[in-house]
Image (cartoon, rainbow, N blue to C red; front, side, top):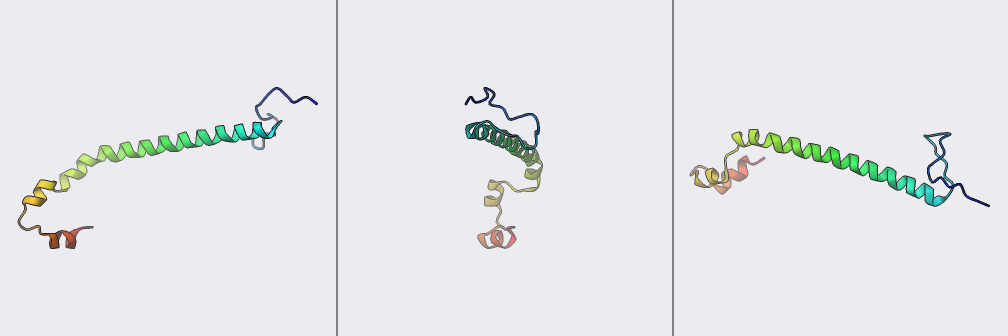
Amino acid sequence: MSLPSSSSPSSSSPSNPTFATKDDEIEFLRRRLDRMERRFDDQLNNTEDSVITTRPALQHYCPTESEIQNCPLLTPDTLIEFSP
């Protein structure tokens, strides 16, 4: 009994591939998982980039650490009261 030399899934039905061995199926699923992880990482990286680029606009509305420390009206009680 000889096994097919091809390790790729059968092209007869791309949505439901058949495999010569369990190892072929495992390799196919690993590659699919790797592609999904890369796609997720790319989306996550793009999200992080967009958040980073909008930060300077947010800093315009937020006091800096030194402004908070030097402001006599801001006490620990008022910071707790107004913190989101």
